[in-house]
Amino acid sequence: MLRYLGRRLVLMIPTLLGVAIITFFMLRVVPGDIVEVKLRGDGGSVTADVIAAERARLGLDQPLLVQFADWMVGLVTFDFGISMWTGRPVVEEIGLRLELSFQVAVMATVVAVLIAIPLGTLSALFRNTWIDYVVRIFTIAGLAVPSFWLGMLVILALLALFNWLPPITYTPLYVDPIANLSQLIWPALAVGYRYAAVVARMVRSSLLEVMREDYIRTARAKGVFERLVVMRHAMGNALLPAITVIGLEFAFLIGGLVVTEQVFNLNGIGRLFVQAVSRNDFMLIQTLVMLLAVVFITVNLIVDLLYAALDPRIRYK
Image (cartoon, rainbow, N blue to C red; front, side, top):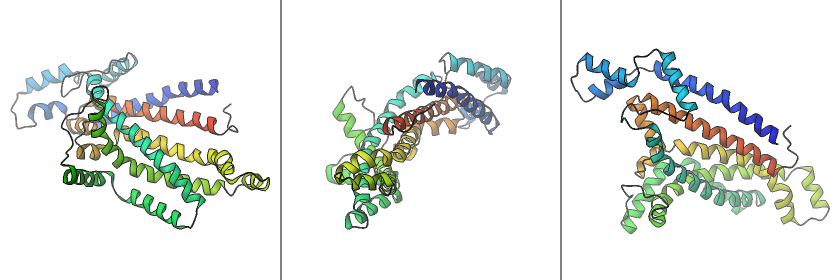
């Protein structure tokens, strides 16, 4: 296991290097100049000398290979540079928002797991009964209803019933837990509903397939209680595909909640990504892409390790 873990960590290096190369050079191909947008975007009139000076200050007058080398050195030394739009360090721009997005992703994942696994299990064990039909309607509705639209309905309901609106500013958990949870529990529920629907359907399908296996029939033939058959023999294997979905959805939530963040007035990573793209802030975009790449790679590694923990037959050699 340690050798497998070490090999996976080493393979992260060429993967991240490939992401860095593609991201850097693709951004330079996209039309648009951040200096033009920044200085002339609102109809301002500036001379060519001012634009040239600003490009020199941002290092955009250097050859592409020199810019790429400087950025890679910064990545290795954890110096992610300065935002080309705000002039603040990229670490500060991301750090202010990563905590919020990470907490929403964790809360949505907890909500989804607590809802999806019991519902998916009940739907599989009581197949083609009224319980199964209710669960399937619940999950299909979760897949059909967009999270942002559900969030708008939640806000309208809270406004009508409790005169509550999303706060303007974000309150960290360590500052005021009650204010923090009262603000983030609603987007977590709105996102977690769709999340739970995906995972519940995966658990149902996997458990139905596992319950048809020969070793399940053997356990039943030996007189093992049905509860033990399900919990001890079936659930471990049935949860393997669900864990993959949970991991991928969690990684997506870190930077993919653009519209939901807009609805609930959350200044998270998704909104920052959109702002950086609209402003052609190359330095910020590059760091955000690398951050999401690291998150996806790390989540995939954790999922693989959980596979081995749940299924003793899996041995990475």
